[in-house]
Image (cartoon, rainbow, N blue to C red; front, side):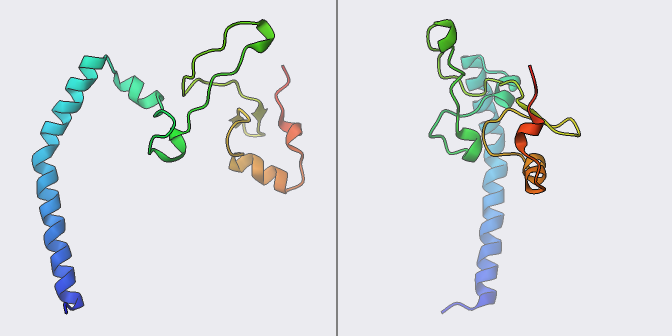
Length: 125
């Protein structure tokens, strides 16, 4: 049976191997990503603003939301495009904003916990 010191030595050895492999593969991986970006016309801005499709393994960021439905205007239903900006619905005392989608932000949760109704912070059109 291995003792703690042997296991720590094995971990250190494996970490070094992993770092060596990462260093060797880094340049090739970057080149592969750049070539795919070029082939698909992806820019750095696209990477910063887009979210993975629903079902992706990106945690909360991967939960794409469909665009607002224009039922009132009778227009066709828009395509499901993640990352579509939504106008702010609530504004805090320090200028913070929230669209009303997703989890309630900490600033608003704190104010509601103090007894203020969240409707107080609605932005009037």
